[in-house]
Image (cartoon, rainbow, N blue to C red; front, side, top):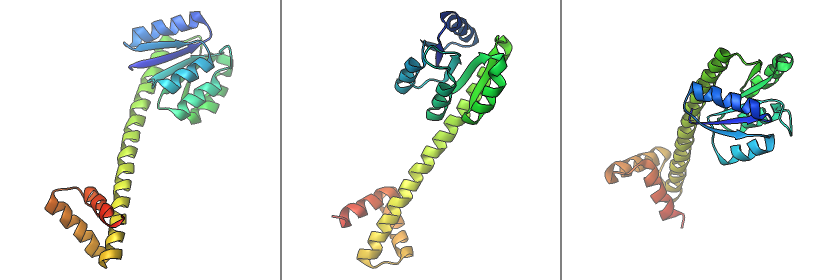
Length: 189
């Protein structure tokens, strides 16, 4: 974990969590003392993990945990009183938020951090794959638009237009996307 955000209304809890994180791994730790401050920091910086010790001075913290988890790839851990931990865990698990009960068990805390790391790594891989797929879809759309232009202006069939784009790409040592862009520039003016 490179960057961790600790959100706590209590300086004592923030110090305890900071020490636990420092003993777990070397990470850049930022401390926020309220939900509003945490939201501002999250909007500016991508954190690997956010640890929320409830309650916060301006809100409880569960809405903040859900918001962080839904709007970013940050792993979120919410720490609350034992009597409401199960209820909050049920409510927040659909958002991907881990909930731990106070008082903290050091071993369980570290295992939960490992789970957050693994989940975040998996999410980052999924996001990378999603980005690749989006690029491929855009390229396919571009090539299909170019095929339509060739069909319209040169009266080619779809297989002929496809073959034309592939042949141009091979002959000119360009990608099919670049050939499609050139076709669109030529005929869409």
